[in-house]
Amino acid sequence: MTDKDLLGRHRNVLPDWLALYYRDPLEITHGEGRHVWDAAGNKYLDFFGGILTTMTAHALPEVTKAVSEQAGRIIHSSTLYLNRPMVELAERISQLSGIPDARVFFTTSGTEANDTALMLATTYRRSNTILAMRNSYHGRSFSAVGITGNRGWSPTSLSPLQTLYVHGGVRTRGPYASLSDDEFIAACVDDLTDLLGHTRPPAALIAEPIQGVGGFTSPPDGLYAAFREVLAERGILWIADEVQTGWGRTGDHFWGWQAHASSGPPDIVTFAKGIGNGMSIGGVVARAEIMNCLDANSISTFGGTQVTMAAGLANLSYLLEHDLQGNARRVGGLLIERLRAVTAQIPGVREVRGRGLMIGIELVRPGTDQADPDAASAVLEAAREGGLLLGKGGGHNTSALRVAPPLSLTVAEAEEGAAILENALRSIQ
Image (tube, rainbow, N blue to C red; front, side, top):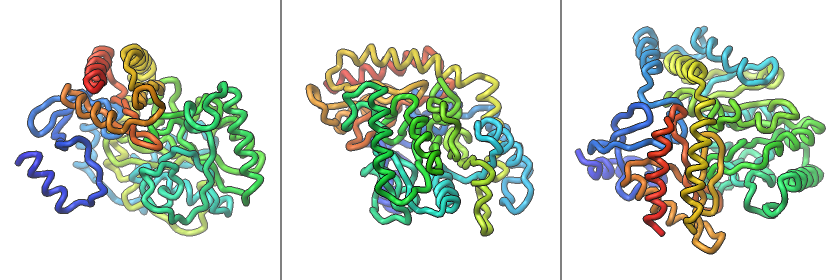
């Protein structure tokens, strides 16, 4: 069967809004390390990792072994029974979270994790008002769409929540872009303080330390610490959405929120994607008094299932034992500098940003500040032709390339990917 045959079948039975990359979508059949192969046998260097989900490596032996062995015993029993792998992974995540007296609840996705965090915060605070960041993305459930500040990923204006959007998630665009970092933070804090004077007390602020779907944008370090001082005075919770930034991807920190840590840890952290290295794991970490505030029964049929927990334990152990956070810092630092060097003379590149192995390249129409989504799509196609898979993102328009390889990326692979990306960028000029 060809990819075109499979594409026809896909279109016959799946929704029109289920996006596919590339003019001729590809079927990925297998992977190893930082590479994947398609159904035609073409090999690609993977710089997107299943949307930042294959965090460690494709077909990592430690993870596949753990999954196989656990599947041979029992795959699933639900949260109605004691589950040793779930307890063991919760213990490790609780200790790593930085949240005192932490409790962990497992879900199957980042969307579900954020949905749970919103339920906890609104119940604890007895308020359905949520502060969210402009250009944000938090998932595809009804409540998560309701707090997503990105029009391209918001199919409805209906929501169970009242959402108020705050400045600050994008450093180089918007009304404060021309300010220094300190002035930018001060202006955003003033805006937040003013906003809080015009609304009923919110339940929480939810924020991605680096906005993922938004194109890997972020504020200056310290913004959310400054926000937290304002929020804490009023009892408003801080939810850090670490679905894309957690587990050392940013290199400098294990959690993205640690770039904003001077006012203490978040009240709630959500996670997913990379912890399972492709298996469906999401979750919430919160202080016990917040996690335990629900006064009705709740379970998770598939959250915390034995086979996914076994994968998470093996993956986390590998990540820590091989210092992949340090590798993200070292190799990611080299990669971002290499990309800045190769794009310096390309007029359509507005900015190369990010940290660790979470890098965004924003494309604009040369000589302007206008987003160029057609250029981003063309670079994606050209990079694929060269043997490199990338992602896309961006706020007002999808004009940012997203570079997020597995954290075990080598220096040689970083150089190879940068060279392919340079050729792809030059080919569309």
